[in-house]
Image (cartoon, rainbow, N blue to C red; front, side):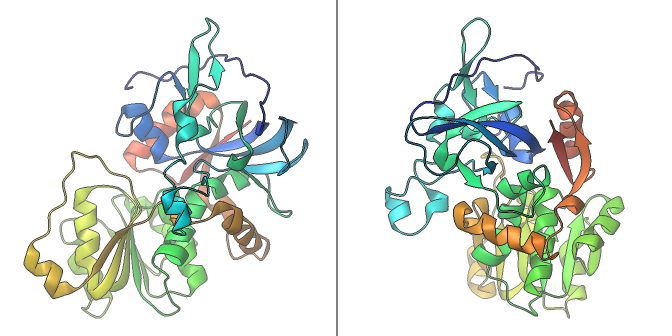
Length: 350
């Protein structure tokens, strides 16, 4: 944790019972990967990062029936077990066992040291071995490289709008943070028919990108952001606010931008040491709903085909989310751009 990334050779075993081996076509660089690299999120080490990917099945283990060799697939970093308490409650995105693969070694270094798969997937590699529950057959009509984004950024952003917040046509919204997930939220709001849609970011240069994805207004973040957002929405605030950064200051700004009785949805993953405070009176007075959204509150096997239909119909633009196409060697630079708030999604193309 905290060390420089290293590009090296690993040895993958043949897929065991219920497993598949996937040759990666592309993998997106997500902020969660940066959080794993820096220790904000915990991971067993040594670890191969990367959890947002797509590729082609090149081998299958005994008993695999979901996919066959040659099938294009999207990787699912949080496969639900289907039988834990939360799965039985109908909330598979909160599955108690979805991270099980991340704490078991799946490959080895040259000296025999076991290697762990980042978030159970290990997509920053030419190939990976995962459970068949961690792959989703890719519907026709979606480019295999861009399809990688369906596995995290798009499902998370679209799901935040349609599954978690359930935005209705004509409702107003504000989005804080315009990385890959924030931009996907904007596209989800556009598909939902929301309006006005306010985009907020610290980087002025992101205005054109924001408007391309569906924003009708753009605000450069400062200590008056919430007041500015309320002015843009008749003085009331927005029906919905989406926080895609994972910081206490932006969570508060999103909350303060939401109208009385509105809904604030936190999509960003923050640090356990970053405290958010509310006084008891404001919780009662504003009657807002503050909720988190995990993986778009989605069911990937159900939602990926739906997202693919939006792509085929031209409603969802995956290419617009990609601002940099890179190789494995370029991941540190992609992390730097992420820290600096530059660009949208960096996509590793193999």
